Length: 74
Image 1 (cartoon, one colour):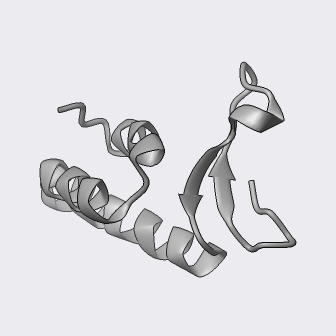
Image 2 (cartoon, rainbow, N blue to C red):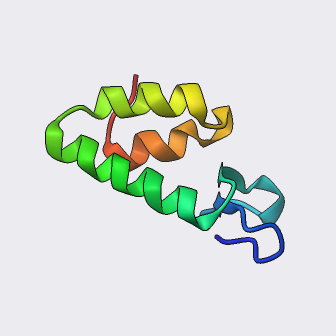
């Protein structure tokens, strides 16, 4: 979900209310870059490297989203 006021991107599913949204990136461009990096990691078989990267630079609450995206749970 894109917050049009701040530009931040959030994850939200059908079982969550709006207040439980998960912050993913500060803006849409960062989200697209992260998604591209995730896809590249899957193609190259280095999902664990991607998760380590997101652990370092991402928000702790967003890790479950990125793990689910690449199918790697540490």
